[in-house]
Length: 322
Image 1 (cartoon, rainbow, N blue to C red):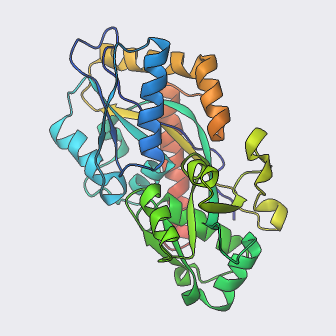
Image 2: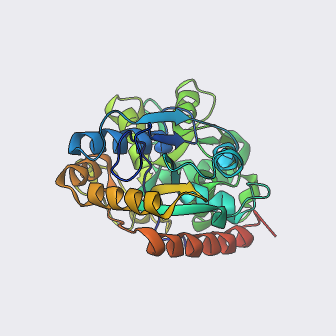
């Protein structure tokens, strides 16, 4: 099965962008602290402030629930004309939109700003786990699906879930519905459950897993990238080199309220483009395992539309939607 081959990257919030007015800017991270959307808002906001693109610390608001659906509904229904607001988005957002998981909402109700990179998926276990390879984990699932629960930071049927299904499908596990996936509101909460022993494995993205790897809490079994990532990430094996042809790249970027003014929209797009083009952001990308993906404005909107269509096709193939 062919996976979505491009996706990935972040959201931010700010406080004083030229052309956006004087009131405080805000970035909504649609999950609890510790996950990829939270990373997106906070890291982008910090770097924008360091670069002088914003006047003071960005306001970051964590608004978890419904795999991003609570935040999406908040923006569409209550803050549609807010020129000071941006929202962290990713392939997980496109996945939920593709599957109709945000009831009554669609991608054309918001404005798509820009990407800040692509974040490859990982499958990991606790550092003290006896499982030492992706194939060993998949063999356990194949022999006894009830023995392995995998935690992720997106809802059932969301992008974290799909990554697991893509890997198990590639390994010849035909009944993907037998795979036990447990959904949490963000990668941080999912890792907490892994460390508590409530689940046996974790699926997320490299940016949200890195801190837990550095702290010695988890061990990455596989990165869902075409080849090993560069630098410090080169020690992590890919699924492909273990004989599992699964690739999963999560784009990261931002959307804005649907009735945001054109002037504010253009200003946000410009600032995110300036961020992406900076040497500081390239260093952040390298430090956190983000791959290049640089899209703004109309090009990003078209990309999201293509992503939604592709995910709908994959979701039908594996029985998530009809």
